[in-house]
Amino acid sequence: MSSPSHVSKRSLDSTRAAGASRTTVLIALAANALIAVAKLIGGVASGSTALLAEAAHSLADTTNQGFLLGSISLAAREPTETHPFGHGNQRFLWTFVAAVGMFVAGAVFAVGYGVMELISGSKEQGGFGAAWITLGISVVAEGASWVRALRQTRGEARDAGKPVRRYVAESRDPSVKMVLFEDTAALAGIALAAAGIALHQVTGSSFWDPAASICIGLLLIGVAARMAYDTGRLLVGAAALPEEREAIEGVLGEHPAVEDVIEVLTLVLGPNALLVAARIDVADGITGDQLEEAMSEIDRAIRDTVHDVTEVFLDPTPGRDR
Image (tube, rainbow, N blue to C red):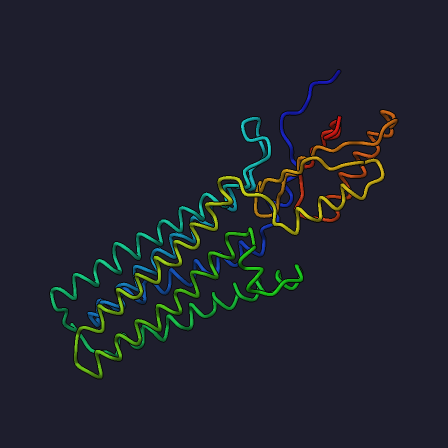
């Protein structure tokens, strides 16, 4: 008898198939780095609290894209005996860390600095021209990244046969979802900063600028909480989607060698990797060779029906009434 293998590479190809996600993250990284520098310069030149809050926002986004980019490389490593199914969950771990970073940027800097400026009575340090130029640059760069993320999301939603909103809610790809959420929040943050600066300019009251900073911070906290929830549940061991579980049960129940499906358990191993473990009652009188053939057929059928399934474990078990 040969020695058994202690690792499985079945999930490796699907984990490494992250080319489009990597490109989306790289574009977002470059855009956010440019925007962070522009907002910092514009914020210092104009003295705008809202722009400085947006600079912190973009700096946090840039750091987050670095986390996401690193997670793609970490997840693509070969499985080991200590991690026999691979490292696909690294994608979820570092997205969760990125969400925590966004929360800190929103709660500590944007809200905290805005409140401090409100209490101290912030004053404009320079002209409004620098602020508006900075916002214009930010809209163009952030918009380019957002369009790229939205285009990829729409294409994936079309391939999955789902509406975009539903696909985003159900997608297990944390990188594209994070970039899309971050860029959407960034565009909303730019709009809030523009509103605060415009109201300051029109009314002459410095209240509106730090108030916009606080609103930006609350926006970041909301987006961070949503991303932390989405990735947190995947990180701790989520099941397949209901329609995926239903499809798997259908394949099992329709096979002629299966008399009853006793238990079906699923586990997310990565953005495009699912583990399936099922206890089934097989037909009486089936021979050993027939059982092996039936298990192989069921394995292939499950993978063909639910493409994200990479690991299948079938346990022939006596029925419930035995």
